[in-house]
Amino acid sequence: MRMALIPSTQPQAIRSTPLTQPVGGNIAIKQLREVFRDAFDQLGGASWLIDFVNEDPANARVFVSAISKLLPATLAVSGNIIIQATPLDEEL
Image 1: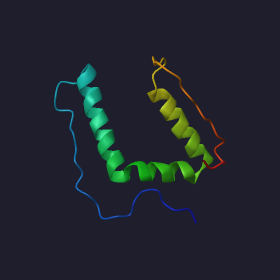
Image 2: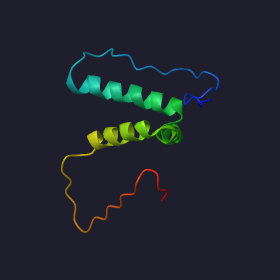
Image 3: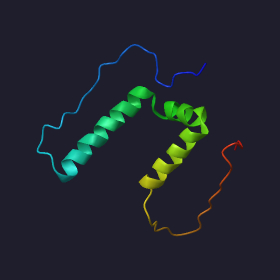
């Protein structure tokens, strides 16, 4: 039996951010980000995301794909950068 990833707690008041302002460019994007952030918080935030990723290797691939789209294509830094990659089945 698979455990449901959606929390089974009492329903919370859903805070909605309707697209009441003129839809265009940055305004709509900002409002959508707020809606997704609210949903993420109500699902359980980082703890829920960790459970989701650990549930199935396909979920881990979805997570990595999503993160790669959020990172900038180029990164300007000063100093050294260390990147440590480990297989998904190996614990840190």
